[in-house]
Length: 420
Image (tube, rainbow, N blue to C red; front, side, top):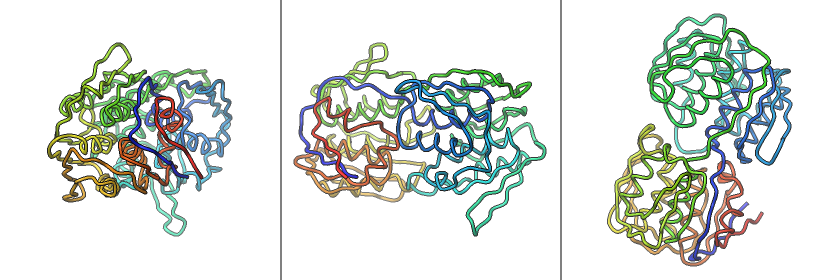
């Protein structure tokens, strides 16, 4: 599928932030730990989330949508040996099934997870941690399957090789029935959200929101009914803020939690973006913004998130001066810049982690490609501010993380159409 976008249109109005994909996928995986029914609210209906739900269904999970964004999940009859490995290969989030399934069933076979092509994203941090804790791991190269089994947990403390979000989440779920201290844990908002859900399953967690977590095992796996509301997506909020600033539009972004946006909001200030916050609304005054260059360096939370590096990269094309981008996380994150250059961007990729973007530059419509989820959303912004028509391909990547983005943008004045 493709988007046909006619740029240069005036955007104005309100746009609401949806539930957080990065929070929904681990919490859906964590429902496996409960033998009773779980009701999850504020679920975004996007590719990765729906695929995760389908993976659970393949194992016997019973699911019922209660409203547009609320679902009841019953994993009382869950059979991990029936898992659809084809679906597992579609999303990287499927790696999050390892922790809860090992905790409840002690053995599991999993294909190599899929996901965005943004560079090497090895499972080493996960696998090394599980091995240290006593998990036996064998890899069947012929079939591409990891065979994991657990007889007894050997350690009550683990130091992660890197501050990995998914490894932290996996270990939090793995430790549901074991005492465990996680050092160098990730502290992102979605990790905190998962912790709060796990507490509802009577799992004691100390140090929530810090890099040192202590998990106290629950007494038993009970069949209890649990409800939880997924937090709103701070990455989506940041993306819409950049959209307003880059297109010189005035937008009100509803459903923001400024507590999760410290670094992105500071970076908006560095770029000269005029904005204000009232309660859960972020108002961006694109018309009043005088954009100037700034340095973009990604860091683990609470630093600037790698998922917002690309949107801010397109903002740099409209800012006066030279902006340096330094993404320490993934060596494939800068590939979107080559697509921006097709539109006329003045940019140089220095190495797999650094780039310089000079601005301001008038972007022209072009045929471009969504290389990954965040790059896709970035190129939507670029096409909306560009002169003329752009054809954006491989938009399935965007659908993995942004719910009905074309319909929502059309409501604020964007000329965007979806075609097969």
